[in-house]
Image 1 (spheres, rainbow, N blue to C red):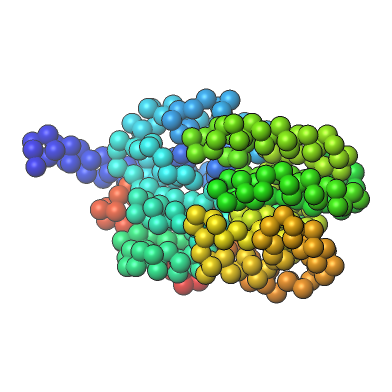
Image 2 (image 1 turned 90 degrees about the horizontal axis):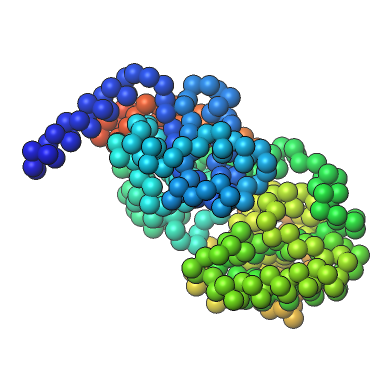
Length: 399
C-alpha cells in the first residue's frame, strides 16, 4: 500500500469515527426516475415526520427535474425541496445511500449502500446484482430472501443485511386512501366498470409482443366498459433498448384506438396504483402491476409468453395460478369473459400471491423508516456498529 493510500485510509477511519459519534443521522436517496421516486417518497416522508434524520435526494446523472415524470405534484415538490447537486452530494458525508435503481452515482466518503425495490416483484433476475453491490437490501418479503439465497448462497444474512420491509408505494392503496370517484372523474372514465391493460417494458411483454391489439380488441368487445391502456414508463420514454421508430408508431396507433372508440383511454404516464383503484379486471403480462392488483383481490387475465428472454416456469407459477391465462391475441376475449364470470375463482391464489410479495401491507414505508433509524450512524461494514446491523437483520427476518 502506497503512502497516499495509507493517508486516505487513515482519513476515512477518522471520518467514520467522528460521524458515527457526532451529529445527526444522514441519509441520501438516489433518484433514477419519477417512478423510482414514487417508491422512495413514502419512506422519505416517514423519516421527515420522525424528525431524527437528515434526508436529501440526488438525481442520477444530475438530470434536470424536467426529465422526470412524477406520480403526483406533491412528489415533484418534495423532490425539489430535498434535491442536491450530484457532485456536492458525492463529497458530503452520509451514513446510508439508498438506490431504487443501480447507477453510476457513488459517494466519495464511506457510507453504507442500500437497495430498495422500484416495483413489487422478483423472480426475473436483477436482484442479485443489487445484493453484490450493496450492503443492505430492503426486500419485499421473506420469500424474496429465499429466492435470492438460492442464487447467491451464503451472502445475505452473512456479509449482507436483508430486511423484509415490503413495498412502500402501495401503502396508500392498501389503506384505501385513493378516492375512486375522483380518479374516474379526472380521467373521464364514464362507464361503471373498467378493464386496465398493463405491460412491462421488456421484449416479449404484452405491448412489445402484441402491440395495440389487446387495447383495440377489448375496446371493441366491451363497449359498456372503460378500457384503459397503461404500461411501464420505459415503454414510452426514449431508451437505448427500445426502438424509437417502434415506439413512435406504437404511440400513434394507441392514440388512434383512443380516438376510434369512445370507451378507450390511453393513459401512459399515470401511476398504475391509481388506475388499479378504479379497475375491475386487469389484463397484463408478468409485470409487477399484477402483484399490486392482487392486493385488491380482483380478477387478473395474464399474458403468458414463453418467449420472454428471462422466462422461468418456476417463478411464473404464482402469477399463473392467480389469473386466467392467454397465450395470444386470439385467446384474450375468452379469458376476459372467464375472469369476469367468476371473480372469486382465483381468490385463494391471489391471496398466496399477496403473501409472497408483500410484508407489512399498508405500513411498509414506516417499517422501512424504522429500520433506517435503527441502523443509525454506521458508515461501513468495517465499522464497529456493523455487527449490530447484522443482528437487526436477523431479528427482522425472525419476526
